[in-house]
Image 1 (cartoon, rainbow, N blue to C red):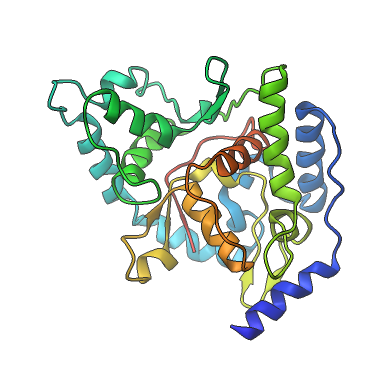
Image 2: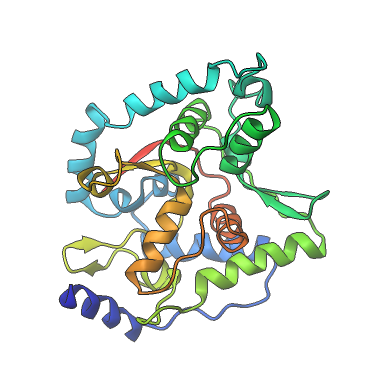
Length: 283
């Protein structure tokens, strides 16, 4: 553990980019250009595959796992849950009538009426409570299964997150941007330290994945989660955010907190134009 933390701390020697007040469109252009310049051999569309897009050895192992992907059973479980009738006769299909066309690509989005960021998981649980049902837990289990089915039905659709040109939406976007670049925790590290400045570099035996394309594959099946005693391997993006915070010895925010929703808003906007490929498999 001490060696791992030392390796993390060593990353701080590389400076984090300065957070400017550029527009979302300017941010997106610069963000994508940074990664395409850093990894010129990687097709832009392939960044949806995370570390497997930048490391050949990892990709070979991943391609073997993808022949019989462990997440398939959870797509099936999600499909069953999605079409199961609620006590009032409705189902998730009632709340998401366009699911067959794919809807994952539109999340998260800014709701003008409430002034809040709406995530896919938020709408899944809203559908339940609107129909008199009990909410799912936020980070894993049934919410990840239903999310996996929705993502699967949305595959190949292009991420299309909008940031309306109004003060509230821009404030939410900039909050997420600030979180991405801000250092935190005892190790004084940011999301950008690992997944921007040091993307493609090794931290002990692991290679750090590029932030470009990160959200496209969620919910994900992680071998690390599956090998623990805490679940079946499937988890949401906010579960992963919490794990990252813990690794830098920072207190995690709650899943679906305003802080993580803002981070997801910025993070996903940075992958606009890339294909939905969830659910996916990660280490």
